[in-house]
Image 1 (tube, rainbow, N blue to C red):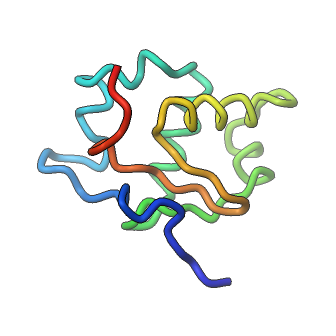
Image 2: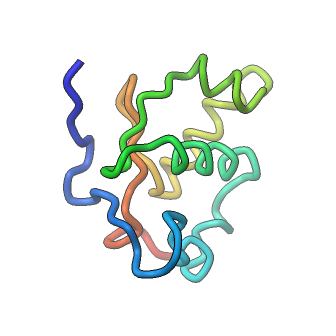
Length: 104
């Protein structure tokens, strides 16, 4: 399987601060647009993604890790897509850079 970025202009880069979790997630109010389940999915995706933000974790694996109720994973994913935090083209997720994304 050949990997490719889903959204090349939004390739994730290590932010200037300490961690992969970009401070703009809080500062720019992205978290306020997300459910708790969506934020849990985001945390898993940020943790398992490669340097470009790509994750190969499929829905079955994510469901096992997050133990969601039926439909919860889809709703969480849809929430993250609507919040412009991830892109999804099965079987890939891409954690998007917060640069150039939607602002509140």
